Length: 455
Image (cartoon, rainbow, N blue to C red; front, side, top):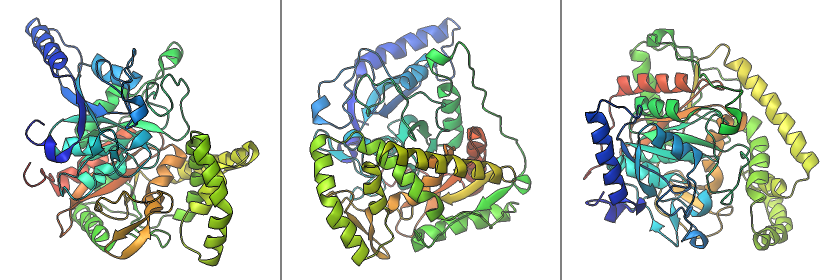
């Protein structure tokens, strides 16, 4: 980290002396024959959205420059309780609200595979720290692809857990001190292998402390079987959000390699992106819109009529009109959207009765160059096929988030430009370990991606 983070800017706070002292204690415990748990003595970093004792937690916001928690986040406490030594915090966009990782407080994080490109967001510092070799394990969070997209951009493994199995108390946002568990949002491990992610997930998953007196969590163990016995569906493109040619090529190459190794995939998928995107965007807008400052809400409301008219005159495949509707929806509208969510969740559950995993793109493009100008909702992005809406980051990650299902992004190779590509492995609710087991199969067939050049 000391040698390379000057050019990456992934790690924004450290506590080296406290970490070294804890490491000495770990060594002494081992010498006595004691074990703190499965992560005994493991040094690691965590996303700067998680309150962590001994280091500031800013969530990228200048207003929280001096915020120091008196109680660590529950997920961080579980990692430390299993023996991990958290020595640093990693960068993110302000309040985890972007697909790039930059802020006025800590600056811009660069992608180790190409420093002129973003590592993604919001867990971009987490993914960059892993790819560059600064840490073997990370703790991210995901509501709009914030684990899976950075993992895809940086060539690491990122797991979005089933909603509710990892407590988010101590995660910012919400504001410091928030006790409720937010809709849609989840925590999840990130690592350089699916096996490491599974190790961390077993440590992290469990009921909230206030529920532990009555409830326990036992995630179903994956069936260890040859590729020929896996029931796999593949969905690699959709007209509502086309996948860029280089990404599609890498994903198809991965499927071909898996088929050569024995996989017998099913290509018929009874879903369309549009089927779930409208509902997801309404619920996402309700969650994010509720936290917007009054000044921003007034500005968005003032823009809404003009923007709606613009989209009617110049139609585009963008969820923005639906998002603006969601920011100002009534509770009755939210209840209607919530019922639609539950109906789709039931449909997806029926689908997974006959399928172990569904393979999807993690994102429609590889890591793009840094581009921070303009309002995020109105921004466009330059990709090989041309100019596309910035919010096209959302469609391919939406199904798992909306239905609360687990999904793992696992690297399957690089494009001709040398940029990583990740395959998204989605499973039924609480079948997290099945997703990660199949990701291990992908790694076995495709081989390791390796480190970025120069790292």
